[in-house]
Image (cartoon, rainbow, N blue to C red; front, top):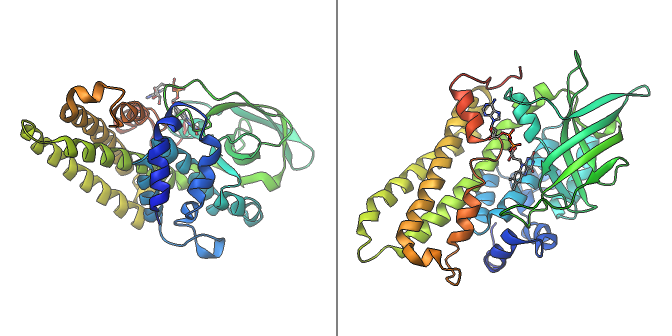
Length: 358
Ligand SMILES: Cc1cc2nc3c(=O)[nH]c(=O)nc-3n(C[C@H](O)[C@H](O)[C@H](O)COP(=O)(O)OP(=O)(O)OC[C@H]3O[C@@H](n4cnc5c(N)ncnc54)[C@H](O)[C@@H]3O)c2cc1C
């Protein structure tokens, strides 16, 4: 499914995708061309068929060339997954074709919701009643990626106050009351269309609901949300270990053992992740997925260290086409993307709930 011309394009523009917006407008259509957004999407829904594991590998394949592209792919594919798991067929029919073709961008503003699920944050978008079955929304989404100006739809969890279940809504960029900030001034992934959203008096009808109960929906989609996100770790660790191995040579034999150890750890984590996504165990055992996420974060950081050790001073030259400095910046994203390493360590230590909100 991955094609050589896409890989060449990503390799050519990886630095630019990381450092600025120049290629951001073209990225979605580039990823859509070989049908990547349809991997793991049933043929009956317009996709290529296959499994969630196939989608994971597709994201990993892109992330190995550019984490910016891998993360944009994840955002688009995660939104598609929300639609696939939504009970609302009409909403799916409305958005899926454009998302699969890359003419519409899918954004997932659900970090706040995942932190809410983990008991560390309250929901930042509030609803008040409007008419018989509508809601009026106010609030803020401090981070969302893949906000292609004028052509995005973003998933947001909305509080309905005490005693009412929060909902998950699909909010289009064209909705009255939606304002997108300029792209955030980030140290990396700057071509990812990452910005904040202000929501003020936005009217939400029942047709725009992904799910009427976020407390039920969020734990259900979390294995796909987190599992697909781990494609970023797989791709980055593979790229970094390959670069380290390519440098190994005279005087670097001492690195062979640690490199082999990380390769094995990566193979084991990858196999466990595929098995869990395949048999659905992460639904009942979110802690197993949390542990995998922590292990993969560790492997990425170790891989980058090994690439640095193997590359030596060349890694410090801006005029060497090693990609090390970019991967170093990209790797700094891995521990902080929600659910963050800190959040998961807290959950596994029993300080935070794993699957309920407090
Ligand atoms: C390039 C980029 C793109 C992003 N794209 C998106 C996106 O598309 N959608 C989206 O929703 N978000 C996105 N984010 C946000 C990201 O996923 C994290 O949510 C964000 O970086 C962490 O939030 P914070 O810094 O506000 O955390 P803070 O709330 O300031 O917390 C700091 C750290 O402490 C942890 N923490 C806080 N409270 C506790 C606690 N009680 N116990 C244990 N740990 C705790 C947090 O998890 C975090 O790791 C993006 C971020 C970046 C950098």
